[in-house]
Length: 176
Image 1: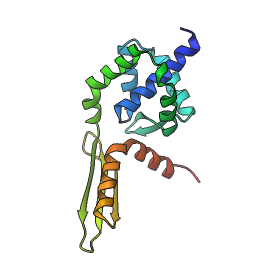
Image 2: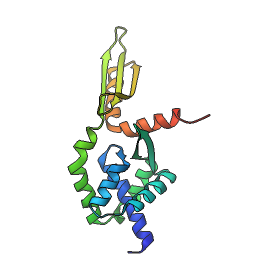
Image 3: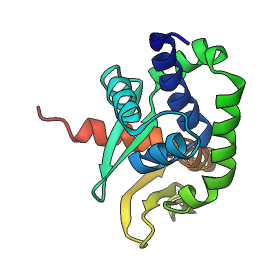
Image 4: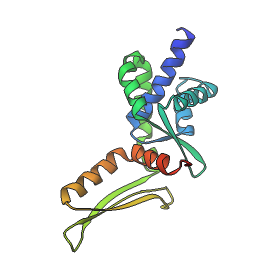
């Protein structure tokens, strides 16, 4: 395989892995996948992560001293266009990694979303992400007018917590 094609496939498999995992992955998790399955070497992983982040296909956050990556909307679009260029062997390797590690990785975060009726007929929605040690990484409390809205927010939080957290961190972490 031509070197440019291999680099492109390496980037696509990282996007695929993050997309299918459904939660952000640490640099260590991505390296573990790549190295254990002889997909790419450490330097190649770092090059791909850097280039994907620079291209805004990945969102990068620092949490408790660890760098975590999640796929951005642009990354999801690119993956949608080019996913057919990933060999079946690589997809299988990624799917195997996900199957064997999803529970461990997801357990690194406790995600919660609940709602409570208020006296005035509105609903208080509490959404949170906690670390392994139980510490709150992020907590959001909202008051909404309807139960349907409260349910929607809870479902969206649980299904999209990485992109929501990334957007929040990006918005409030910028210097003006």
